[in-house]
Length: 363
Image 1 (cartoon, rainbow, N blue to C red):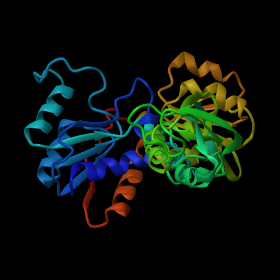
Image 2: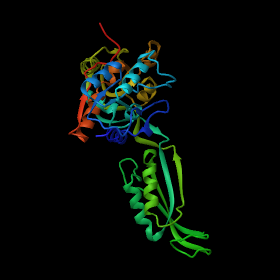
Image 3: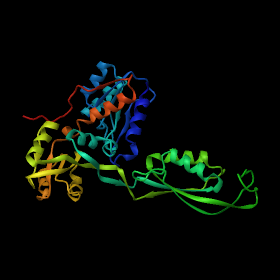
């Protein structure tokens, strides 16, 4: 196995294009072509985790949180980030992070938390806008079906639960080939008119290269006319947080006890709004920015982490905020990634870290 065999699979699971602008997911340290015999899955990368990788002979650490988040101007070992990176480099261990891109996919961090809590009918709480594109191209009518089929096969044409979606309109295209051209129809030096179809398809940004390659491969013209537009439409399968329902209503007290038992640690929460709860919103990690979305979606409880004292007042008796801790809200990501890699590469040695990287302890 090579490093890139694992990282390319993980990129397909949670495309890097879906990460937030401030993030730093992807291969952070190491050679993508390096051969490795095993990998360790961890929530964080620390010196202790790298030493664990050294002991196990693992050439790759896959973590949720990137060890390199801000810019590194020097490597002198003055803090744990620099020491961890230096130790990994010294022993030839690659470091790969799959962070907010894994938060933002419908089968990622928040889906796993919903699964642990037993939520049903789950969906993205705040779908992301700006990651859809519309491709427009012009095809001779005789080849429209061939081109459209190629675009669909490359991943274009998905709208919600529907696929192979497109729009076509017929018109007349004109062109004149210059010196040295070999036009599919017409004669060089003479203006030609051709019955063409305007084809429109939607695609997510991470499929752009693949879809354009399919277009150029299937289109019969030497010079392909095409336009690509960014859309503000939301992609319902990608975004922040999730919301779902409990199989049956529970008392607020019973749900909070269920929450604590499921995730461990300590639950900090605002006063109950009603006697029972049914609809639960979640966001692994720091999710206070989604409170308004949770309230608008009529969630009874919002489960997340990293709430500050004054932010708890924002519940305003409209919702219960339940802060379960950052590590606790994302700890199941290790299981998620381990299961995905092990299923894809069953003969490759994959380990879950034995190091508990949570820097917070409780009495």
